[in-house]
Amino acid sequence: MLSLRLIRLHRKQIPRNCIGILTQTTIDIEILFPIRRSYFRWIPTSDKEFAESERKLLTCLKSPYETCFVDAGEVSEFQNLTKLTNIKIQTLAVNKLRQGTPLVLLHGMGLGLGSLLSMINAVSSQYQGPIYALDLPGFGRSTRLNFPTDPKQAEETYIKLLEGWRRALHLTRVSIVGYSLGGFLATSYALKYSDRVRELVLLDPWGFPNKPKKLTSLVGSRNPVAIFATISVTKLINVFATLRLLGPLGPLVHRGKKESKLFCRNFEIHARVSGSGKNLSEYLYHCMAANPSGEAAFRSLMDSIVFAKNPMCQRLYDLRVPMTMVYPQYDWFIPGIPSKELQQLAGRKCPLRIHTIPSTNHETILFAKEVEQLLCDMNAKTEDCSS
Image 1 (tube, one colour):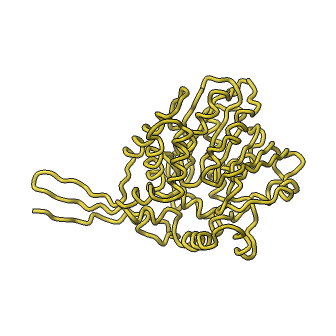
Image 2: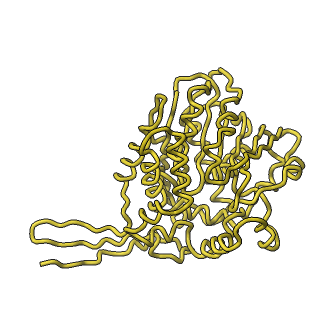
Image 3: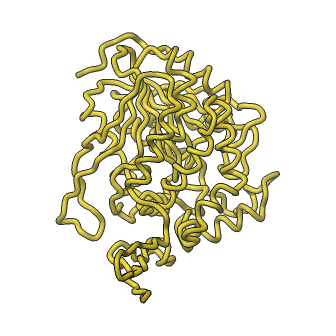
């Protein structure tokens, strides 16, 4: 006889500011049989499946590599300030024995280190130092902690953990490449630890311009329906909440999205490994379907999704690190800042270069040949970077 039993809602995992309860809830339906039992999960993801999808994706790497969880230190979690949580950051190290300045790659919102593999393949043979890619806390396979809801505290938590990660690996000075949200966090880190950063390269960074008084001013040639729909929905729920709400249909919907297909197709072309695009799609689904603690942190940082509550343009004058900003020619999502204005915002101690890559957008800039060449040309000094 078949019987169905609703197990429970994990309400302790639901932040108070999250309206989409089902998006952060795992509903298990237990199916009892006389001899054996199986489980039907509403959201088809697990730590084991996530790790396996990452393992398959890493097979496209062409250089020696290793992965490990790096202990980034302890932080007190939101709603439980008396409890310290040990944070582990999933880290990929390529050409670890090379002696040049380490290159650290930070991914964008909702992604993981796997999204950066084609870039690593493109530069690893020429770059003189080791290359590190990591899952930002709250994303990928790193610890998914409960971040503070205050934007300043959430940003400070990220910077504290990135510094803990650097110390744990005994890296003296690094160059950082940040994509989208990763560009925002890389700049924030460099503002506090300028002596630890040799150079910044920001690929279509999020969170730099001030929010305009009227959002209609950011539309321009972009898609106004998509912009205002995205802004309206993300005021209420986390960015990938609907993907989780779709449950078993989530992977299918994710694979069918135009942006996902474009991203994965470009990845496979540049990785030159048959099937790597499909592996990336599977990996990215697990990145987005898991506990959305990084998304919650992003919601704390953002204002109408495309802007930051504490925009970076107001702090650039204090930056003391050489910086290269790379923007796509077409971008419906992230508004940029005119080049002349950026030059004025940056201080004298922040040499600034600005590049615009033709025929690219936010999803394809990671695969641009110009970006690969820029990273290959970086002056990686052959110095001992161990403290």
